[in-house]
Amino acid sequence: MSIERTLTQLQVNPRTAERAREIGQLGYMQWLGSLPAQACYLTEATCAYMAAAPFRETDPAVAEFCALLKASLDAPLTPLELALPKPRRRGGAKERRLSL
Image (cartoon, rainbow, N blue to C red):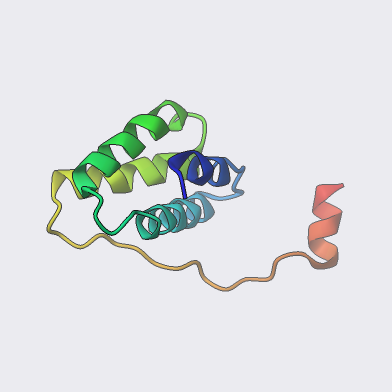
């Protein structure tokens, strides 16, 4: 998967800062999982950061993605704080009423 597709998926309008953090972390995990086995992480992460940086100010999930990339480049041998999103209801009547 290319960085362009990951960035497109990150450019959403999350309702809360917590949701933006979850989406950014998911995007980072998705991008990381899509790297080829023989890829140089430093090169790939630098390219991804440069591609995502222009969108940091307008998209909170992209800002989280960039923060994770920067943290991994600054201290590559320290574990990052990553977590899957908490389960939650998506949709239903309440969600439909909010979108009207």
